[in-house]
Structure formats: structure tokens, C-alpha cells
Image (cartoon, rainbow, N blue to C red; front, side, top):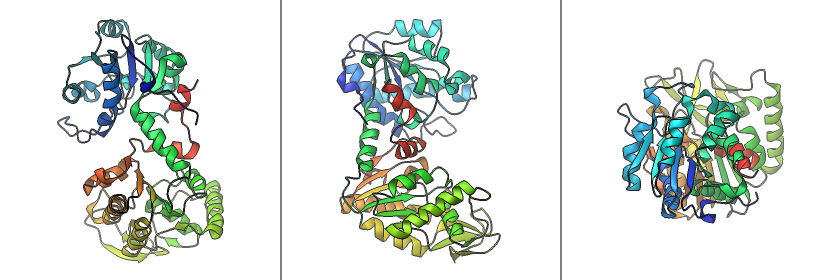
Length: 405
């Protein structure tokens, strides 16, 4: 991808700078932030603009308020946390467009920060609405996209708003720059070998194109979790009531068959050989270890088994470049979390002990790392799950594309 300008390429003195961040952070029932990784990753961008004596206007979404105001989805809870992290007072306004919002922005002094209210309180945000985007554009002299995790969305503040600024008045933030650099490093195929890709999760449809793209330069492609069962079924295995998306879907059927045929030549795909199965989706359910090709009717595969864990971890341990997206099972339930946690530990160990380069993305994968306290032992944690997958499929996404126009 040709170079996109970053905040390092500009001086923002006296400029009103609209930064699209993703502060859609997990919280508890008391609105205390459980994980502020996305906030931490955007702080360098904010500080760069402040150091230039610019005026910072932050815009973000939070949750799914469905286009109308809801106190439960207000961004006001972020103010104290942001003020503490930035060591300055962060102002807040209870709207994101309109005359009052413009007035609040125009009152900003150099070196001040204003957080605007949830973009998704307007249904237009999720509809690529040009008028809504123009109203946002009126607030600023400059636009910065530092929200990689939503850059795959066709939303007004991501794919339309930046097009209203010329190339001299827009750029990406430091978070976005890091995401692109690390993903490009992986996709370049120039990483140290062996290169191992580990894919899990439930939806095979979202991973097919990635598998097709990565099979060319990967040395090992490990497939676990729910997306392994369609492959087993195509190969003639019995998967019981395990998850699959290929029922009556000839297109997916054909693509999986094509991938397996290609693998007959390359021999780089490893599927689980055994799984933990259950007769019920619950921690209290009966479980047993089973050959993945022989799961009985009415039983469900919910985690990879001990032999699969051993095989996957042995491959990871020998790898020098590793990418992981998606859990190996229903890790939210303690009974079915061992496979995913084992993978998380293996990748962390390969990174710290064997000096492997590791890139992990997707909420579930990052959550698994945090479960075992290894999130700081990874080369790079991507803030985007869906955005990372989209970039791996296309080497681009709408948010990045809009910055190049």
C-alpha cells in the first residue's frame, strides 16, 4: 500500500483536529473500564497534537444505541479516565453535531481536549450519510483516523467524513500506523520462517478468503474451534451437532474442497485430531474426549483435545512468525477453555523465549491472553478483530481507502 501521511508529518498548531477514535471499551455494571487498551493505544496521537498546541476534538461510538439517545450509552463516563491518563482536563459536550457543538469547539483553546457524545446516537452514523458527515466536518480544520478497529465499517465518520478533507488536511494516527505496519510486515511474507497462522472462532465464511490468501506463504496453517468442523465434514467425518455453516451452501462447500485440494500439494494445514465434546452447552454438562471424525449425534465439539493441543503447541514452539485470530473452543466456559489458554501460553512462550514475532487480534484471542496474564508477552496486540480480518483478506479497508482520496 502506498504511504499514507501520519500525525508525525504535520504541525497542528492552532488547528481544530477531529480525531476518530474507538473508545468502545468493555465496562462493568458500575461503568468502570475493564480494559482500556484502545484508549492507551490512541494516547500518543492525542499527545502529539497537544504538543503542537493543537485543539483536540474526540469522536467515537459506544455500544449499539440504535440511532437514539440513551444514558446507558453516553460517553460521559470516559471523561475522568481520559483526564487522568492525559494529565489534563478533558471537556465533554452532550452532542456531536449542531450549533451548540460548533460553539463548544470554537471555544477551545490551544492544548485543550473536547470529547463529543456518542456518534451512534444518530442513525446516520451507520448509513454513510453525507449530510451527517458534513455536519461533523464543520467542526474541524483537520481529520485524523486513529480507529483501526472500525476502519472496516461503512460508517459516516469512517468512510465518508475523511473524503470531505483534502489530503493536506487529513492523516492517520499512531495506532492506525502501527496496525498497518505490523499487518503489512506479516503479509509481506518476509517474516522469519517458519511462519504459522492459527485461526479459530465460529464462522468459517469470514475466514475462507484469509485461508486462501495466507496459504501461499505460511509454513503452517492451524485451524481449530468452530471453523474446523466444516473441514472435517467435507472430508467425510461425523461431527455430531457441532457448529457448521456449510449445510446447503454449495459455494462454501466448493471453496473448502478447493482449499483441501490445494493442501494436498502443500501439506501445511493442520486440523484437530481430537476434541472435547459435550451433550449440553454448559459448564455442568457431561464431557468426554473424542476423535474429531467420530463425534456422536447430539454431541457437540466445544474445545480441542489433548493430542491436538500437543500438536499445535509443538508447531508454535518451532515457529518464528505467528499470527493468531480466534479461540479454539467455547473458552468463556471454564470447562472448555483449556485449549484456547494453552495456545495463548504457547504463543507467549514462543515470543519471549524463542524471540518469535507474534501478532494477535480479535477480542476473544486477546481476552484469552489476558485470562492467563500473557497479554504483554506478545509482539503486537491488534485492536481490531473484524478490521484485522478484513485487512488480511483485502490488504485494505474503507477507512484506509478514504484517507487516500
